[in-house]
Image 1 (cartoon, rainbow, N blue to C red):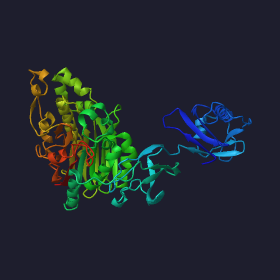
Image 2: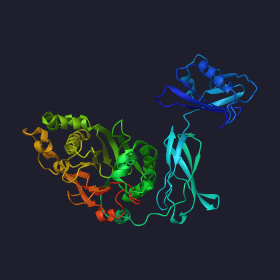
Image 3: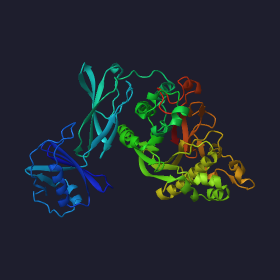
Image 4: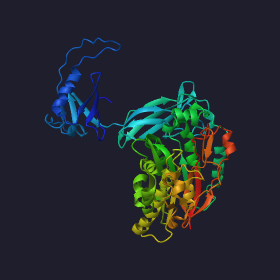
Length: 546
């Protein structure tokens, strides 16, 4: 690492950082992008000339004062004009920097591990991945070492994730992490496992369900498998309300994603989904951990945040061998609703309170259009997480109606732009709808006619009804309305809140993965627990084109 000046600059920053070592002295400072070379050299000489403080002392060493002859050099070793703007010089890694007789190469935005940790309850037979925050990269390599003899560690794996065999229970381990981007490799960081590998959890309702899905996978002739799953973001776990009201029964070490992701990864692999729609996915977790894991197993992904004030969003993953991404995007519910004449009319006559509650929500939905390679057919996937507030039943209805209208409009557009024949497009509308079987939104999706006086008591006396447009009557629930006991469970509450709706005109649901019973999950203290990673259950369905 000697004779290198490390330049760091974020894409939208007006300053950049400088770090190098000269004559055993580490020099670190930052400069404005608008500085000239001359201003940089003056600052550099001040930094080099400042005496070095002794460790744990306010006094400084008496050092011989050295003069410094500094300049930037071009690739042919010609000194650069001191009036040049600094940004153009330092962001060109063909240039060099000279201090007296020492020549430095410029390295720009070297990938760096800012922090790294690993669960203190990393379990054998589960997939272990360090939690890493990096700068200037989202790519990293890992070398895993397990204690073979006291204080002697042997290399066992060189992958970003590791699945330790059961015989490694009680063995200590460590992992060496090396960030990289293109041909630039950052400094390796080694972290020790805080505890030895733990024994895997025993049989749980989830392990029984996974055994079932492994037995049935490959036995059915299907076009694709769909999973919808709210994975419970950390940002909603560690609030006073959540800890005291929603998850008081849950062991504290189980709650962090650092522990829960090893269970999630096992679920993802066992479900073997062709389309995986997730809700409550935190931005950093998606980019630093989840996306690299999915790519390692052949899935590509698209991500969208709910809004600028929230750290979580939705993600859709799809198998690259099965699907090709045609289009993706994110739309705001309170803006797209005006594309519907029915919703616009409803908002015009409903009460001010309901209208404000709906329009002030920043709920979004993401969509993607996928091309099924084997059949040259297309799938439209709309994924969302609707408003969770308890008294927002009517708001969720309007959000659901907005999403349904998007399905209708987008279907028309795709048939026109892609030149498809009838039956070539199947639609999926799914996610955490926060809507129970008796909610307005679920009744709407099951073709009930809803009167405005029921939806909005403050609008009494106004004649207006809201119902699913006939053209959307083909949207059918993958799981019949009262067929499952629950998809969400927290302390003293459970309900069916998650749904997969599909286009029954063009798609057929040929298999549904059975759900665990309420009693079996309750014996483990509810959700989440030591063997189940979220307060929601995944919905899994297999589909074919008709």
